[in-house]
Image (cartoon, rainbow, N blue to C red):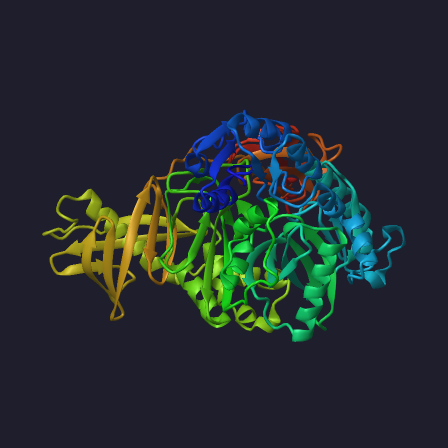
Length: 638
């Protein structure tokens, strides 16, 4: 019997495991870095152990410290969650050697799947279909496009798409460097890139008594940077024959390595209905809630049951309905998916959906970890109903703080390619990102008007109304690169707002404005946090930056300056790059890492690199000067 569990992880997954432990009467132990000292998972645990430092390499990736913490706290089992050490065979072995129960697969099974190249060899021997590898030294133009992948990788790290043979060598070296930095293993391999393919996976659960459950399929095709954004179960538009093939292959994979516990076998499904093994994740997946929803199971409770040596039932329960999950990230999809930082003032979802989150109101979103804020999951009897339910919940959510991908999620769920399930594939965002992130500034204008009116009420003890004629009130709000100048008067006869002839003011308070817009009553909730103003309505939300009436004329930078778009660490500088070098437009200069993602900083134009004030390993704040590229002076016309 397991009586106390240490979760060797943080955030959402730690809270998720703790929730099940509380229901089972199991005590909980958290570990935390200094950056996470005030995190929700720390407060929710019965006991917490500090791991000194901030960086993952000094804290959550230190298996020796975590084992020591478990022993010191009196835990008798360790749950690894996902990420960090969850698929580290040496850590699993160290846990067992310390006399602790490991809530995961045997170390030998983890080791067998740790390298994608070795895993493919094992799966081929077990009869599982897979893509044939490509020898990069002998690759031909006919084999393009190709995908370079890290053998020990995951989450899109060490992965490069190659569309021209001339790019292959450089992308191999770049993938090797990124893989070595991320996983301590620079091995990469090359395989065909299937255009129009779908990412479909099978959830498995196995015990020590020979029972292997295949808990249906999940579609995870909507991805950015090879990381999943929206997942659903069951995977739509698969034939019964293909589902059977996937289930059989997943069970074969589990039995081939004597698997125990929860795991996921991932496949690439082509447009003509063929399935190829990609990899096996020897852990619980981020997207496990959609499987839980349709099977009405608690996968964490079942993991604990298996770790205690208890048998599974002969067959799992029958699935019911459809579930869809959206990952809410602190990021700006329109700016190259740049992670965002700052204070999360509010995160609230309407009733009727499941929210798995690692953060709460008032938390600071920093640079050290993945930018995932929460997972929002909706279940309904049918796919159409589940998708509609999730989109509506996200649209009505109150999310105040750093920029997020919320609007992208809503638009994705309502896009014809998504609602028409047969059109799903991993190229969805390559085709549609520009349209999905295009700001709707016509709609934003009336939200900005609501912000200005609420601000006027908050600043005036009389609600902003005036008895005598005067000049208009003027407020300017920025959103998505557009400035909205709001000019209005509040008189005894009502609202007189320039450019809003069809708008009537019905009621006004510092935190709520009710307008009649073209005959329709619309209610806006307004919240201010410094110079940021969040305006929420049932039909959407906007976050504005209130601009000063008289901008600071000294707030300027030297022409050609490249500023850090986010806080992060300079992880690489282009080899040999030095001040005085000639650079071309688009040439990579350096790479920043923030929230587990690398961001390439390129020259904005051809010119001379006149300043490079950073070095590898330096941490920078948002807006810090990274480099200056001076363009050549224009030649006077004759």
